[in-house]
Image (cartoon, rainbow, N blue to C red; front, side):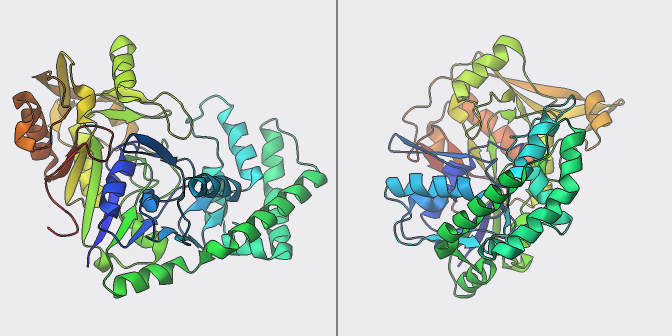
Length: 429
């Protein structure tokens, strides 16, 4: 058996969905371990596009359990919509979905608070889906969990306690206090959604532990990326959960000794959504050309992503923070037909060269990227073997692999499941 974690190595949107879908073929169970519906994974299988937001990308393999871990924050209405969409495609027809009973719930007042905050100057650019406020409630020991949806009086007590603290905040930001009718509706709708979800709810931690104990191949699917981690990312421009590989253990109550391999996902270039440092960012026509070539618009929000050259010091930091054993390189085909391809290989900071992205925002602002340049390459369509890649493409990939310090498990040369060069199998090698 093998237990493998797939985690984003950059600022999210690295193409984790495709890689999880590929690895799910060898897995017995797929577990999403963090975040909420602020993440979106885009899958393309035989030309058909599917976007998931909460359900793991392994959903495209019927019969394999898909688990939502206790470390997630879940909007029950969004989840029900996603279940309905997947069911209409013939998926989740055999009871594959398991929702952790201790995952926390996003309620309308979480969204209202976040929308008010994001409407003010200095906002960090969240998806406004209530993720952060839900995690705040969790850390403040006043969160609503999935299990609380089945106890209406308990649910009402928790909502009232939260609103007692949050209504003054809403009013401070220029919002109105919810009416008694609104609050009653929120509670009723949450309880109703809970009853619809009840058949899927259970002890996710015990379920995953039992699978591992019986020798199953278990695949953990991360959300966002390592550099958005609440503790180790570019704070405060981060998400509200643990996005590094260790978050998988925390979310599901699995000891780190049970993990066999960690696979990091990196694009052949870099993107970022929202505010925050991005030293290799491109601007103007160059950024727009890369954005259009890569379809760099949020799977959840549709927002255009900021685009730039691959940042190897940032990638090296991601490799270290998540203990990555290897990498999966995605969207290499997007760089096809560009006259020149660059990659940041180091930074100059106060007269010295540094090989990891600084973690202090002031240091990042002063750091100067050091770039290596490569001549562009042509189309990668139809390439199925690494040795058949153009010479300059192989040189670029070899540089990334060497300076990142870990080997590649696969190289993606197109969006479809079949457009992948597999170099090693983390479940077997």
